[in-house]
Image (cartoon, rainbow over the protein chains, first blue to last red):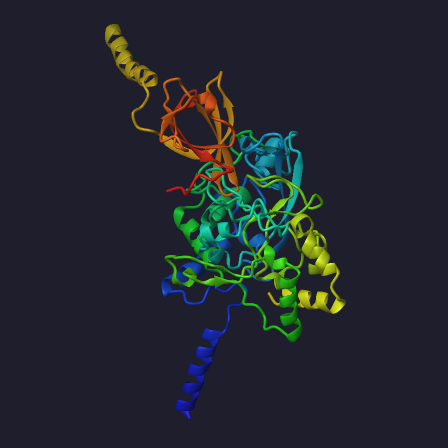
Length: 384
Length: 120
């Protein structure tokens, strides 16, 4: 009898190991040390910063998990923040002013009591030269370590900036200021996940760190004396590394089992041309972490910029013009409640209808489908 | 006593004054980023750089003696400050002075819109 229970326990344990990752869980196949870093990193990710330990004095949130929270830590959130830049279309090769001299494009919506007392402001003021303010929702960050592990050459292989194949889709890469290929952020500016995470501590929470040792400014002006009493850096290298480990090792949610309708929807998704930008799978390259090495990731993105038409246009960013956006990864889409970069669409159907520019042809083909095929495509999206 | 005080004061101030006149031999810092603005008359550069969305600008004074070279197709050929344009990706070493950051070397490595290779 006891032997039977042991066998059952072993079988259950094996089944649990095979169970696909759920939202918020780590990648399968981590070493014990990697799993320990993931767990410790989650604690840092969920740590609340106060003014006494460095919060702000300008900030959007007091912890990473305040925005990446729904339904689990690392998922999306209902917060909307504001980015601003100045677009100069006449300046070839340098069309975008990211307001680097004003502290960058992220204009924080909250201030500490000390900064409020000193300047009487409730948020960072936007300079008068700003031409456009964009709203940005919080995306989930599941599977981003896999996106980070995709070689540049894979992304560039999908680029077709001059549309030489005449399919109406002309994805092109964005690049960071030092010339490296970008891939993270709604405009694909940031080259690596680590830089995105390290920069977010300062830009989103006001936490200086070894990568970003300087405190932010108030629209370019230095902070008033005494408004940021915590010594810099306000988080150390260990905290950064653990946070990065948590984000890097978060698994993409496994797609749900597809119904017959959803399987048909997957075919429709390809037939109307969605896969021209939402490339179903990318393959990672060599990587020091085995769980990230040479893996297929069902990301449904090419990580390139595409012109989405004037109605969606907002800010420029790096090489991205106002109407260009990075193809949004669709992994984990079933957990999303508001769609597109600013959450303006409440349903997948609305999001499809708002595709224009390079997405117009697929949108029109979607509109022309029989109702059953449109429903099948949406059913497929809800399995991702 | 008065002479001793003056000598002590001179021995304290003289090294500081000399140090302020001479450029340090070891670079203080380096930056790789995109040129945001060039002022040839004032001999200054603004370089956009940063980490993720924490974007900042580095302002550099460029004395006439600073070597400016072009790695982008030029095999390190010398170029003039006026040849640098917004959108050029440069690598610069610089040091701090009471008047701000002063460039020691500047190398143009490419254009942001053309890519400038991987950063080591």
